Length: 372
Image 1: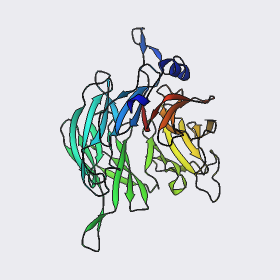
Image 2: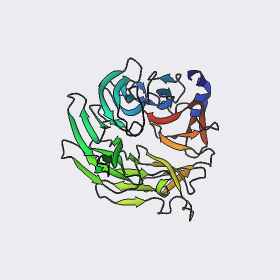
Image 3: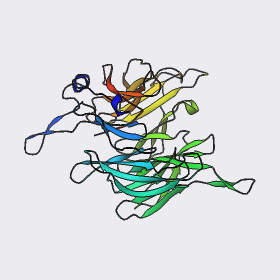
Image 4: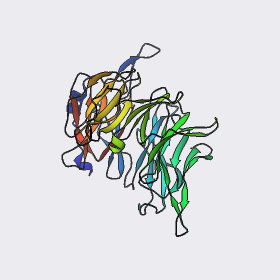
């Protein structure tokens, strides 16, 4: 599979634009310091790969021969380097309800051997997930029936929330809730997670973390995806094309909810048809990028909203649909991904305000994240 990736340095440099992703900044001594290029994290088969978005290097595999590798985020080291965290399933079945074991690893972005941190069991390999704290000292993961906070220094674990089980007619217990996809707030004070509460219900929970008392708030939002604002005060919650493609801004402190699609900022839903929201992502200056279509089956556009949720830009209509992945670190553009015509692989590109989407010439089985 590796031979399928080819990233011509010159082509990507022209697409990305000179000195857009790599910024020259003055340090305290007046010397020029270079900000590292943004890095794309993507999946190829069951392994995680990374690629610099400015074309300064070839794509590189982070894992090799993994089983169901899952990206768990990144954190800065004291020396200024970046560590990546990921899960990998030990050999075994991934059937729903059959218990398997995952290993949590840490590896330097610049390369080296992965370090095994700990192992945990789960009975839903497809939905199990983990998220590392911004400081790299704690991680939250979905165990068999609980969402657990683990201190990576001491190994101490704290149960944050538990799934519920009901007694079935044959005397066995059936799991009705599954806690998944923990995402840390930028300040490290809270974790957002989704909960499958039965076969047809998905809700959102927000958990306050130690040293404050652990509290779980169920805000009842029908979806299980979300992204935090840079200051951790708001969540952009979205639900794909289930539940009619919702897009809601939730204020964690005031509990106010703004239905973006009902506000008239984006094109109105078509009566009798489901709308579709691909993803939303915040920039450091508070702008919001959204992938959206008023009809679920139609291609998406990428929309840019300002801090007051006013529409300031939008992409052309592309087929297949572009989905938002995240902002470039300097805020000059949004990294997007779309499914290729073969229906099995994805391409990544960059949408810059007042310009078209420029797609980069390499493929991935799934595009996951952008890291600084």
